[in-house]
Every structure is written in C-alpha cells, then in structure tokens.
View 1 (cartoon, helix red, strand yellow):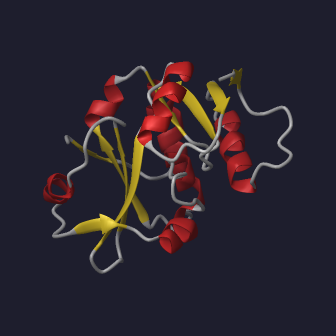
View 2 (spheres, helix red, strand yellow):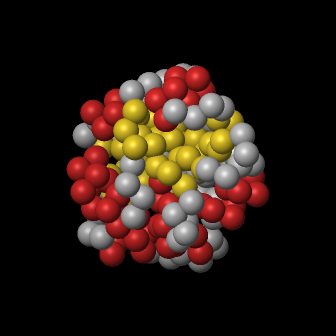
Length: 177
C-alpha cells in the first residue's frame, strides 16, 4: 500500500464530499498522510491501513435514539467491542440503535462503511452529537476515512483535538467504554 502526503494531486473521479474533506484539512493546516486502497468494509480491513499510516483507524458508529430524533457519532478504538448498553448508560439514553442509511446520507453525506468525523462538516444544522471514547485519544495519531472508504487519512491526535474539532463545531461528549 502506497502512502502519500496530503491530498491527491488529481481528484478526478473522487466524490465532492471526499474533496471537501481534503479542503477542510488543508484549510486548517492539518498535516496528514493518505492511503488509497480497495473499499475497507470492516475494521479488519483497516488494520493494515492503520499500520501503513502509523495511525490506528478509529471505529465510527452512527447511532440514534428509538424515536430517531437524536443522532450520535461515536468514535472509538477499532479493536474494542461496542456494547450499546454501556454507551446508553453514560449518555443517559434509554435505547440506542444504529441509524439508517438515509439519515447517514442526509446528515453526514456518507454511505455505510464511510462514516467519519470529517462528515460532521456536512451536518450544518448540528443534529449529530459527537461522542468520543477517551481511550482513542491516548494514541499520538488517529486515522479515518475522508468520507469515502477507498481512502484513509492519518493525522495527529493533537490536530484532531485542537484544530479539527473546533472547526467542525460539534463539541464532543467524552465517554469511557
């Protein structure tokens, strides 16, 4: 797998939502490495990608409450199991489930397998609450898709916390899973 510094030299054939992710990172002065690869459909697919980028690829889960009125984007370590009841208790929500594909596209501009914190840029009405497992922040670098699962970017956790999160305008809730 070849690793590149920054955005593709030629963005022909790349979705506008992916290009906006690169625009955001560049505008904020976030230095990042990028790997292009076949569609990463599972966290197992992301292990070698994270190794190439020296940045573990975070697991990004798009969730909602029973009424589908509140949405949550959970970021956690890729190899950590997810238990709905643990997160529900910490957020004081009776029942969480995975949000549907339509809400994912409407709110984040992404498809299943491509959920990413970079998609929060598309949530202009601030309908999605960002939730981060504190253990993820112990890594010096983290990786995520630029809203398409055929590329992955890796950047410093410091840049994520101090540059990217403030620019996205989605103050996170922190949990311990």
